[in-house]
Amino acid sequence: MTRCVGLGSKAGTSILVPVNGSEVARRAADFALALARPNRARVKALYVSQGATRGRKPTSVSHRREEAVLKDIADLAARYGVAVDTAIRTRGTPDKAIISEVASGAAMVVMGVTQRRGEELFFGDTARAVLAACNCPIVLLASERIKRGTSDTKLVAA
Image (cartoon, rainbow, N blue to C red):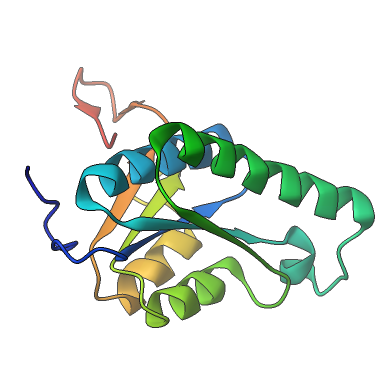
């Protein structure tokens, strides 16, 4: 059995996957679960409430949506036979919540990201902050292939 670099073979190792209900975040969760299964790792799905980033209390509608996203990930984990923990953070920005969870012992982070247009490869402020602050392996799973310039060269990050 092969092991993922950075996860080791210690049972109970945790892979953190931030989720927000987007398709790319769900694909990242799927990828994290696929990594976790042969490595006997746990997955922690983290949802950072949108109200948290705006300083508002979450409404019952938004809270139900957040819970539904996490239930979807839990159902996916059950199909993989992987243990999953879920959490909703209502305080702080997504990058700070992710960095805090990593500091609590995550061995790896798998994030769904969307490439931003521009001359340089950029996946947003959250991904940049997590990459800068975390020493564990981080997998960025991009949403699509993006053409650069007029050439036929494509950047593939998935």
